[in-house]
Amino acid sequence: MKQRGWRTLLAVSMIVSVAALTACGGKTDKAAAPGEKKVDFPKKAVTLIVPYAAGGGTDATARALAKSAEKHLGQPITVVNKTGGGGAVGTTEGANAKSDGYTVTMATVELTTLPHLGLSPVTYENFKAVALINYDPAAITVRAESQWKTMKEFLDYAKAHPGELKLGNSGTGAIWHLGAVTLEKGAGVKFNHIPFEGAGPAVTALLGGHVDAVPVSAAEVKSQVESGKLRTLAINDSKPSDALPGVKTLKEETGLTVSVPGTWRGLAVPKDTPDDIVKVLTDAFTKGAGEQDFKDYMKKNGLGIEVKDSKAFTQHLKENHEQFGKLIPELGLGKK
Image (cartoon, rainbow, N blue to C red; front, side, top):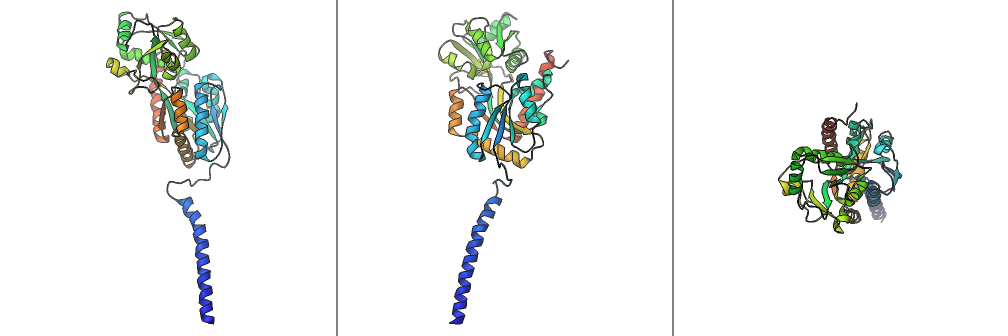
C-alpha cells in the first residue's frame, strides 16, 4: 500500500509539473515563434510627425492611417503637425529624433526635391524607410467647356502653338511643376508654366479661366470633374486612376511613355533605428493600410493606395532622388 501510494503521489506530481511547464513553455514558444515580434517594442505611444498643416491631404491621410494602424501596433499613434519651410522643418525634426522607433515621420515627395532645390539639408539618406502608403499621379485637367476633348488634341495644339498653353502648377519647383516639365520634355512641346501657392489655388485659377490646364492629382480635381465643371484628359501613370473612372492613361491616349513624377506619402524613421524595430513599424502600418476603413477613406477622397515595404520604399526614394537630382539643375532651379 505504501508503494502504491508513493507511485500515485509521484504520478500526480509529474502531471502537475508537466502542466506547469507546458503553460510556461507555451509563452516561451509563442515569443520565439517565427515571424512574431522578438523585440520589446513599443512600450508606449508612438509620435507621427506630419510636416504640413492640419487639415491638408497629408495630415488627413496620416490621421486615418494612424487610427487603422494602432490596433496592429498595440499602442496609440499620436499625430503632431510640425509646419514650415515647405515641409523642411518637420522633416528635419524627424530625422534628428531619437533612433528608438517612437518618432515616425510622414515623408512626402518633397524629401527628394527640397535638397536639390537648396531648401533642406535633409535627404532620404538621413532616414530609414518604413513603408510607402500612397501614390498619386498627375491628372492633366482642363475646363469642361474647353476645346480639347482628348490628350492628343491638347498636345497637338501645344506643338502647333509653343509656349501658348498656360499650365497652372503648385509652385515653382513643386511636384506638379516638375511633373509638367517632365511631360513637356517627353512630348516635345513647350508650355507656359504659371506658379501658384499650392494645387488648390491652381485649380481655382483653372475654374476661373486664368489658365488652360493643371497637372495635379486626381484627388485635387475629383469633385469638380464629378460636378461637370472640369474634364481630365489623361492620367500620367501606367494604370488608370480609381478616383476618375473612364479616364485613360497618357500612353493609352497618345502612345507616349513618359515617366512623369507624381506625389506620394510614406513613413520613415531616423537612419540609426534598429532593423527589428523598423520591421514592427512596417508590419503595423502596412496592415493598417489594408484595413477597410482606411481604404474606404482613401477611395472617398480620391487618394491612391500603393503599399511598399521598407526595402521597396528605399529603392523608390533612391530613384526619386536621382531623377530630381538631374531634372532640377536642368531647369536652373538647383543650388547656386
